[in-house]
Length: 443
Image 1 (cartoon, rainbow, N blue to C red):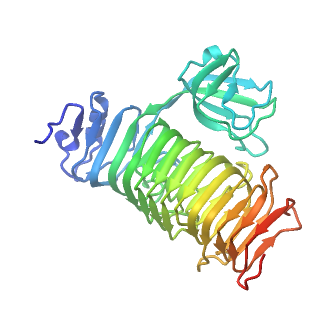
Image 2 (cartoon, rainbow, N blue to C red):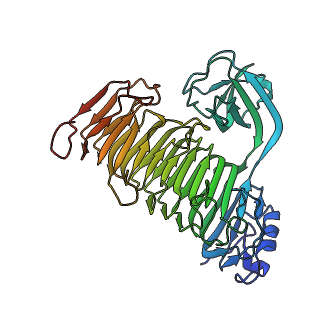
Image 3 (cartoon, rainbow, N blue to C red):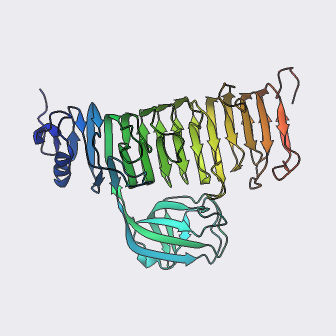
């Protein structure tokens, strides 16, 4: 016996939208304004002509595999990646506080100094940032964190182990935020417009969001990232895809998913064709990418921006790797990235990437770039095991790690090249064990 639908769910047809010939914008806004509705279904194709700002929690969208379009949509503002069809967002509040650290904040520690802990309620959420170093955005922390314990008058515990050490005197700034919770978007096929940035559109942006998931979103002809996240915590993006975005050269365009200042996310079972990036982490930490695959990926399928990302894991993926290579404005830094069972045409981590681990990685030369087939890596706590490439090139631009550099049980057709002169010269000792070249010679 079919279960009768309750008042907690509804669909577009109940508001007179039977196909894509009539815009679905008004119907959507009416459903969103009813707080008793928790599930919105779409059983037919839909067309939207407005970009919707959604500020409510606890709602699920299920498009049941139908096509969503944006023919005739209002123009986007210039250089606004959050001009998505659905921009689902919490909000920053006016409460801003700062403290100059009276003592160091050690790495992987979760107790933070504050000016007055009476102002930090248990379970409240804050955007935590620090004063920049040399680069304009060279900040070791910019995260949305939750207070989990009041320690004493000037210390609180957050739900995050700080990835980088701070010396006394560094300034931490706290801005209170009201996140959005538990908004999921599922089972959408999406076709964007092809005229350029003004009418370019992508389906989904999440900002100041907790436990907000996206699944089975399959897009083509988009401009900005299909699923854009900033200050998100605890989410899953799965079984999503992007084919042939309309722009891949302009920075920020043509991604399947970009995650800016995010925590505890998982991206899995996704794929992209001819995109700029399948997955980008910018200033994010404690995230995982699993069973994701890019083709036509010569701009880099899997990248980090270099804004002090840390503790990221990639397992069972395919596509070009490029870590922390966006330049000194953001710090050119990352730490503790692990890549396991990966195949691709190029691997780049020659910036200040510390404690990189590669295991069972195969880098195979293709026709796009002359440098394809190479691994270019920073020799700072680097460990490479069971890997294959045309050539391994080692440079060194940082000296943070306490662990040894080890190259073990690997095969490099043209051997290992160690840079010995210039500003990127390798200064650390390297243990090369059971690693051979095409002639069977140990490197």
